[in-house]
Length: 82
Image (tube, rainbow, N blue to C red; front, side, top):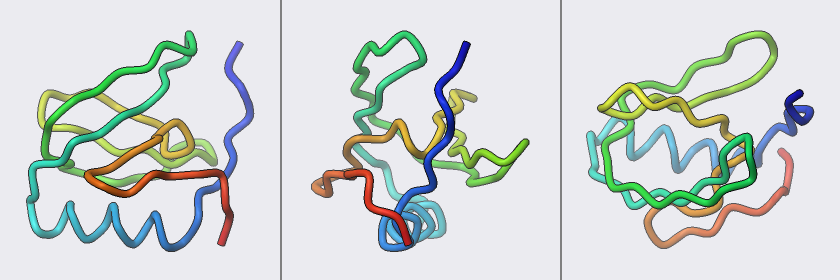
């Protein structure tokens, strides 16, 4: 069973959109469904919504739900909302 999606701050969404458009290679830290922390270095190729949840897609096809992201480059993501 997955936890309920919590929308992220508009500021964080803007950061994700910016690095996606700029095709910037990012350092990303996120927590998966099993509560395991991962650190990856990749480009974000897409930001999209599905079934009321928002995701990023990385170059290798990995999908990360936005509320599970903890860090993108030098910006720590907390649980603030728009």
